[in-house]
Image (cartoon, rainbow, N blue to C red):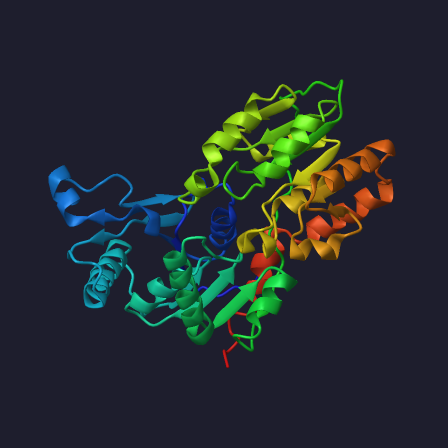
Length: 386
């Protein structure tokens, strides 16, 4: 990574630090080893009336952790739906932030680094000039029409005005290259286990284990899973990850679907306290699965980070049709029907997964580490937009 002590990174977080997909935290962790970093907690705004009623500053308004400053905005002026009010609140908060940090916004090259389309609004209202990076980590869309329209407008602004736009897949590159000439393809981002795995969770070995790690949310294809699990009691299905709530859950009746899935006798569910524990769980899987609902554009055009966790552990993978995974067809079977999944599972269980495949998978995973991703983006920080 290029060393430049004159850089100051500001990263707006729209998801909390403990969000299942940890691209925010991983990026900050690596950047903060070389540069000063401020996390602007967009998910945790405070209104002036709340501040007054508390008669003291709220916990977490400004704090430092592991060398990173975390700041939560206070909206001092009401009626934030108006652009002028947004600009004034942004000005007040930014001035306060730099006063608290005892630094000047003009003393360093400020780099706004965002992961979500909402960063277009942050950049629009940020009162001091800086360099803008849109680190596109996913294909963002919504089944709620008004939300989807906002996303498209924000992306249009980003494609026109941001200094650097990066994507983590060929699929996203193909989608966005029509909107902007200069787009960089960078590694996905992946964290290998930090130490020798210590298995603390044990699954019964009487039956083959078909496993999924990740959040249980609206993204999963519960119709496929329900039929697959019900019809194949000769296999144990493990779903390992937190129940993650979303505004789109109601449409897909996710609470009911997850509850039913967990009630089936050949299902085990839980979540890990650490990443290494998750790897120890994956190690016990015979076949790994990515059962996303590919009828949703968000899923069809995504690049699941869990793929490289599976690859690192040398596991065969079955997925619903996700565009980017066609580049890994040697190691990933894809199908949309239960019958396809049953056939693939039987085939993969019949003979051992080749050692040369495991070796190739691990090499692919290690090409996509977070260090390699951040270093690649850093090399583009002086890339002029056109």
